Image (tube, rainbow, N blue to C red; front, side, top):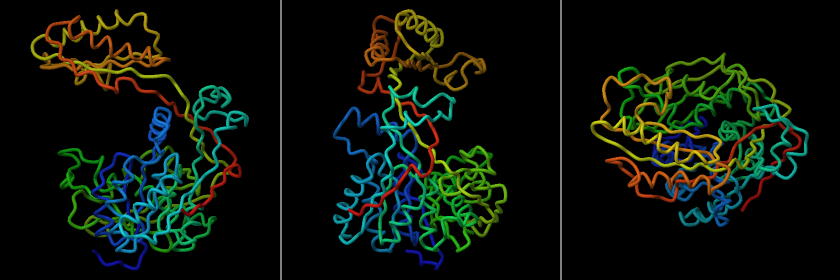
Length: 450
């Protein structure tokens, strides 16, 4: 294990639900971390959790990789005195915290103190509050019939409370991504909740860490233009944070990837609409004053990010049922495959002509699936074509028609049709996500130790 430096070191354990687990273990084992933070909860993740809960009442509602992630890091965190902050609680943080407590006992960390953070559930009355949908301006009340969840984005304060009360591991639900990393800084250095400059800098550092390997060369490599060493061996980053929020971004020695001003800048502006006004529940961050300096091999010093007072409102993510998608795929190869795919498209459109759908797409993968009508004409005949069809329908029965008609192409179609074996996932429920703003004082977060 690397020796601790005396500065606060916070490491990333995940950048999304499906992220790799091995880099988290490297950080826990060799990173000399004070804190390891897992960010696994995106808007799409909430949607997937709500869909699964509706389909499977036995689904516990937390990160499906929780056991695997915790088993990979808990022995090392116990040995190295590393505390954990994680939003793997998804839609049921209490159940996740209880499971983590069981996993701690399994790992020999029987005295670990595990806390769950609960935020106010706004589902029951959000439609009656006279609010507007951010994306459309329409009243939230128009969603009442389809609304299944309304989850506010909480900030760092409840996590700080749990850490102040001695939690070794804090499990949250919907908490803003940078807040997971800001909370350990506030706890460790005693930053006030209205110290906007430090909170701005700290939240900016949290934003750099929240997406995991994206700041160490992941989602960055472009062969011959932006080359990344050993991209198969990417590490997750850590930050050595000073008392004023200035930090150096680094990674565990012996791992692949790279950290330089280019990787840091790309992550700094990732999913940021206004760099001068990046709104979080804790502070409004100003990235335009940031100063970056290469501080050594795979180390970048980040300073100067500003902060302004937090807003009086909090964002709420609302999930609504929006029908079903039926999807399937089949293939043609060899001479004439493009002509066959085009005729197959005509056949399917004719056969599905009576289907009531809200949207229908038929794409030729490798030819027009991404750019659509803007795709360039092929230089010559392609050697193979994969035809993908997807339709969004009001009911599951309608969506099932898509796969049934694709099955029919195997015999009631064209020569040389290649067909996948029918599978269970050809139909999926759609949970649409909408946003609104609620007064900050309408949301309360509580800490519960398990």
